[in-house]
Amino acid sequence: MKGRRKVILGAAVLLILISGSMLLWDYMKQSQSEKIYEELASQVEETTETAEEETEAEYVSPINFEELWAINEDVVGWLTIPGTVIDYPILHDPESNDTYLYTDIEGNRTASGSIYLDCDNEGDFSDLHNVLYGHHMRNGTMFKDIMKFREQDFMEEHQEAYIYLPDREIRLRPFSCLYTTSDGIRRMTKFDDEETFQAYVAEMTKGSSAYIQPEQEVERLFSFVTCSYEFDDARTIMYAYEVTEDEDGTGETESEPEVSAADDGAETDTGDGQQAAAGDGQLTDAGDGQ
Image (cartoon, rainbow, N blue to C red; front, side, top):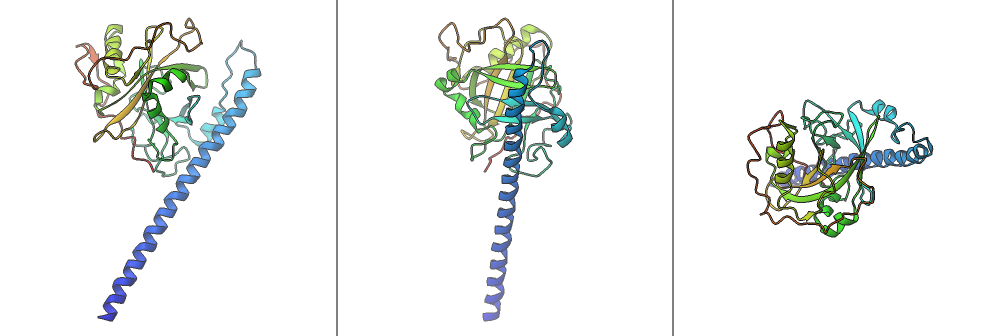
């Protein structure tokens, strides 16, 4: 009997040691991944200052894409949202949304994964609707700050976002945030005509908990998607539109922000002319980050 107890006790101790080692390994990999992104972000800050000193006659990207491509050729841009911790490279695998769900820019398996563009999008952000994903990390990194845009005051005070590309800069203005389902309609990237696209924008932003009336017609829509926990497979999405040159850069709206009176995110048909994005699957599970 004593021998049997010793075997059971020994097995339990071994199991604890193995579990502890696995947790420690995961923690070390996660810390390493966070350090990588912090170092890349600090380099971006330095190059941004240099780029601002260059002549305005020719666009000079503040991002050293050659250096990023040496790490990973799937880098397609860099996302920065001032006033948040969101300051990360954007990855894109046109074959699958699973590639960077739990993989960082260096190819390491991590809980935080990467910020990445939907596989159905073009890598140059030329689609009318571009969908980006990031984990809702409990330590505040990746896309957790997207949740803050559900507050009207926060959105009104944070009216700038930027995506830096090798050949241009995309200026964005957040205007809607809500929690919703992971229905595949949220991933649509291709539309038959302008009327269909505008109907889609109106439908997707119904039920917003925070909303600011766009100062211009939305010509290009960007979705920032992360996991939410109001119900199973819930998502929080912050919508932003690309700011054109004819809109002033003050970030102020001429009218009072309007909160949609629509119900809680219910979706209806936005027209027969829509084309679903290739692969009509659900929004990617942005994960229950640690």
